[in-house]
Length: 101
Image (cartoon, rainbow, N blue to C red):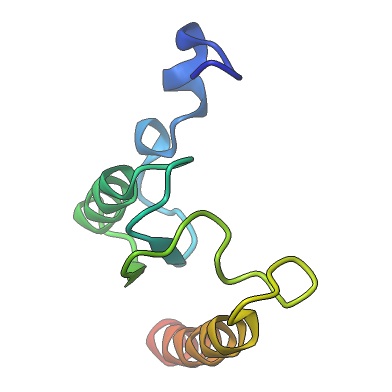
């Protein structure tokens, strides 16, 4: 909140913009994220699904913000996390395609 200002927290919060018709959403999030607390992402996922949308959250234990970026950004174990998220993304997209078509 220091960077964006307390008065903008509702404006920039995804939880305050949930409505029916949001595109299917896949979220990768580390449980140790200090930039966006894991509880916020859980709340968004629940609200989105309760509104009738599709939202899947894949939690990564003890990972911090941006952990899955490619090896250019993260030198340690980045390839494993990055490759796994790409595989999960493809599975998600195939499943969504089968559901919506």
